[in-house]
Length: 124
Image (cartoon, rainbow, N blue to C red):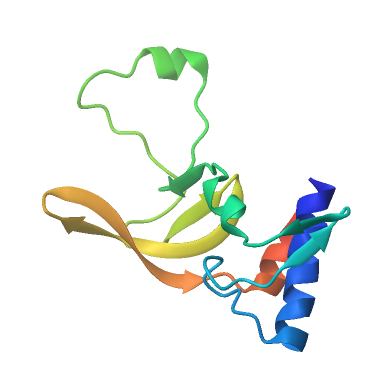
């Protein structure tokens, strides 16, 4: 994992000095040296699986209350209707949004992206 971090750090440094296009992480990415090996593209990053979660709200229930739930039961959440939903990637907040319906399926429209500085602060 340290090699990946070093490769990405080197890539961002090289972008400024070489003018390489790393924005799309695809074709045309600068060459990066990491641990003595050359990486001709950052395409390897695109296949890393991530867990994306959209959180509607939270609540705490005693086991007794949980066992009493039935179809039609209402569970009160910590958020109010209309409040932005939180989008988490690997349990880290990256954005907020609102529920939308597209072709009879639920989705989320992102309304606020957490800045990179704030995301890095969450890692500490």
